[in-house]
Length: 172
Length: 172
DNA sequence: TCTCCCATGTAATATGTTACATGATTGT
DNA sequence: ACAATCATGTAACATATTACATGGGAGA
Image 1 (cartoon, helix red, strand yellow):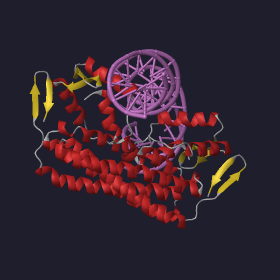
Image 2 (cartoon, rainbow over the protein chains, first blue to last red):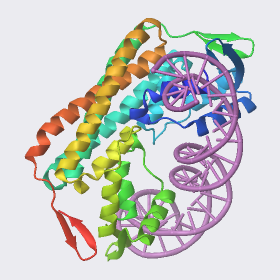
Image 3 (cartoon, rainbow over the protein chains, first blue to last red):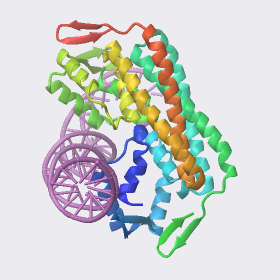
Image 4 (cartoon, helix red, strand yellow):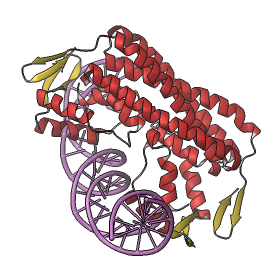
């Protein structure tokens, strides 16, 4: 993708996780290029200005795998989780399922803790306590439901096969 | 609250919005103090080390109101929304309801856009598209449901009355 | 012509984290 | 004695935003 397209596809989820500015996106792409983790190709098109289309390299794929398989993220926020979802095609089948199960366990913990907290807040807590806790509980429950149905649906799907072509890793 | 307590109460939602480090939290409190937006009181207790308990001042309350009533946040992320929820007691009754209705309209827009996107992604999109879109849709639906039930429940609740005592604004 | 969207980029500035330091108290 | 939790803080470093600059193409 191009930097502009990356921002656009993230923008779609900006209400959930925000979206980076060009001032951080473009320099990040330049850094990846410098480290040979991606390649660029200037694509000129009629009717529209030319774009710089980036592709991930083999070394980039390895770095991505490492990032994905980094030890249990105790801090793992919803934002990080959505970012990993965007990279689903870079997961091996078992890895993706394990990742979702990890998230499930983590959110389940939080859900239990919030339910506990809601009980005490209902008696002594202020309005802001009740609102924030109730909101968190609702989101956690929704995420658990989605994770369960997705974990149920995923194994039936054929996962992408990794295709290496020259220096670039193509995914289909 | 003390800085330590602020972090703890945010930590409870770290899976949703993350939680700031002490290296940013403490300097922030010092800056607020410098601007006379908060006051400190060192509270020594038996059995535990002393804490610096911060309270918001009248000027701080005004600054907070301004921040809360800032123009439509086009970027408004879930994180910002949860932060506002934590400050619910600083909203006047009508303001809080208007804020929730604002969020509802915004999430409803995103929900509609995602539903549109899911249809095309089901045909031509990759796995990561379907996963991220489906996840976003599930969260959006849950948030809409929570907003609706909360907007229905809120008017029946008595909202906190603002109490000013000396230089500090106390909320009950 | 003017404005909007596309598309990329840089530099000053703001903001954040990481790693360290301090010290009291509680439990083992 | 030792580790863990409570509690605060600073400095070096990493990362992000904001504001600007550039330029092509589309439509009013």
